[in-house]
Length: 416
View 1 (cartoon, rainbow, N blue to C red):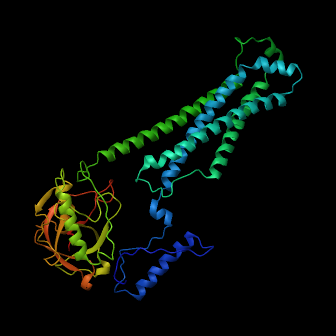
View 2 (spheres, one colour):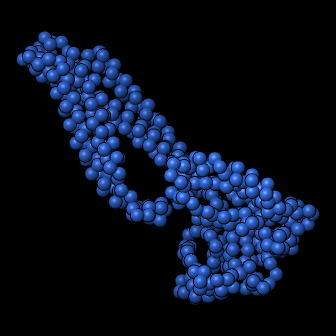
View 3 (cartoon, rainbow, N blue to C red):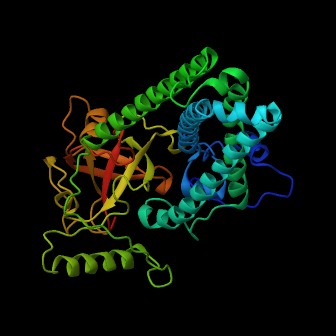
């Protein structure tokens, strides 16, 4: 497989070997390979070692950390609110507290009683929350559809359930202790004299409640600011020009078994027949094939160079995004043709090799020149790549990421 710039390998780590240890060995392996095979080593690529889960789902850790921080902030707001409510509630029960203490109950017994009430409410709230979570978990795969890989479904882990219940209990204890202790410190004689209408909190309780309100307001402002920034980013990305139109476009992926379609010619015949049948279907305006639709996360890259001058060795050439398409692809996605022509049926496997460039690619490779008729080297075939002629220029498309355009992008005929 020497000379190929890309290969996906899978392996199982030995017991006791961590992913970090395996990743640390990759630079030495790359340097050793480049030293042994300098003529075929591709210096533009580096090895990336990830777990199988991360390879399928991507790096979701930053998103989940952000979500966890937001949930923690909401929990703190809720805790502050509950503590404030409990303090008000216990302040309104000063007469009851004074009466209990007058009948022989000590402060510890009073605090224990009210903390038990708070803990009971917290456990009940935690159980209700868990029931809602179990119900919502079943809805997540239906809502996510194919946008999130959820092979085998998702479920709540027992450790998460235990943690949630313990957190609910801890929240009740922590939020109930201080209000109960403050309420039990009230003057016994004054508490017995006060009526329900004249009961008021002490100066310390007022300060504590004002502090809780300040915490709630501060955390709420942080969450509102973060939500506003997230909404602004979403709106900006939603209005981002992609270079193509996806409305009224249907896309489907088809896998071709190697046993039945062993060579490019058989795959090209299948693609041609498929396009013809879809094109003949009622309501279809135009049909085409492509190896990967834009923004799908799938793409191919190949080394390239201009034929004039002194092209760099294949292993030192830059990589460009390439898409294999059939005639009609640009019309299907409403990608504008800026110069030259689109691919036709004449661009077959046995015909002259041709290529269409994106607008930014044409400006980068042929500044102040007419790119039509120019020739480029592609791939690693024949040790130096294949020569293809530029026959057209189309508008730029955000193929890989919505946040940025591709610097270099080529379109090749499917049969070639």
